[in-house]
Image (cartoon, rainbow, N blue to C red):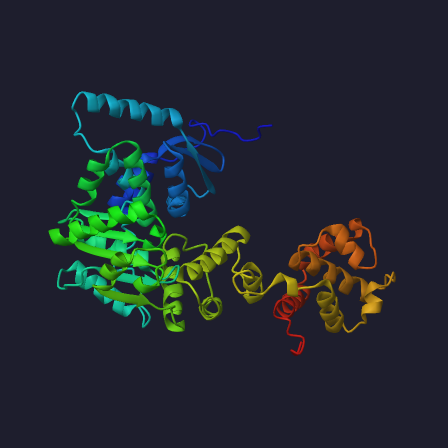
Length: 470
């Protein structure tokens, strides 16, 4: 069934994709545009969305995860009726481009490039969004930042530079920033240990090890990320060891990142760990509260630039996120993105109780602690009735509303099915459960007092603060 109507050019003015492309280039930068956004083809415009296409699934996923929100913001600045973008993969276009490339190569129109060079740069392109200017520093990462800058300005003899820290602490950001700073005047190779292993295995299978050695040992700056993934792969470690030595002998700068110090790496050859420890080893500690708050404020401002009319994250929420999400910067930014998504979907800024609901898995409020018995007890206490009265068959108004509220909260805060909820409320039918949920949802739209009561109860249930004053 097709209810969508294609906009007719003679009836409604369509957006200009050329103008959109020009603004994408200006707002997101020439490097990003040339690397990714130029590959987007305009397909069609519909009532409230546009259809675009790219040549590969990888490009589609990369653009969707990193740039689609910004592109939508630019499109909406030209036509506010557009509320989404659909990105498809046009394999025929990809095949056409592959044939064209093959034809050009056969006729020497383009230079011969080794398969490794093509493949590596498709998957390990230096990200221009991760530079020194937007790396937010604090007491936990200042030393790593300064060492990275010194390597970039060649005022240091730190070789190799080994940066380690937990997941989401900014190690990859620093490696990108170094590569970005040095790539104009040097041959820079930025690759993950996993990708290095993939290229190594592929080279062996295709009998291309000479090209592999020549390519990786020709770098002036060699940055390798997540070195811990090299564990246990003896043949690859052997090749990496000789590549490492060849680069040092050549005078190339080597920068390595890992999730632990060299001496704690498991199933890595001792001679490799010894060479890592022979340079400068620096750790990045978990961010303190001040740094977390700086990051939240910075990311909020950054998002406002693209969605100024849709985004308003209160200081209360910013402080809450900074206080509660402690372990990882990536997790902290992910939590903010969830709140932003909530704000866009419901066209409202979430309050503190809603924020706790959205982030309950990150905040370690185990769902197992939220039981039906706890919900019933707190609701009864709030409305000053007994649990016996709530679970009875009586339909007095002063009992019906608390009962419906408890059923609504049980559905919201647990994974129980409707029949299970009915059984927990004195074997009520699941249709009664549905009626209760719909009634509360409808009343919430017009009854502010009920909304506040439910927010208070959600807060108490999640924190299990039974001793708090209501």
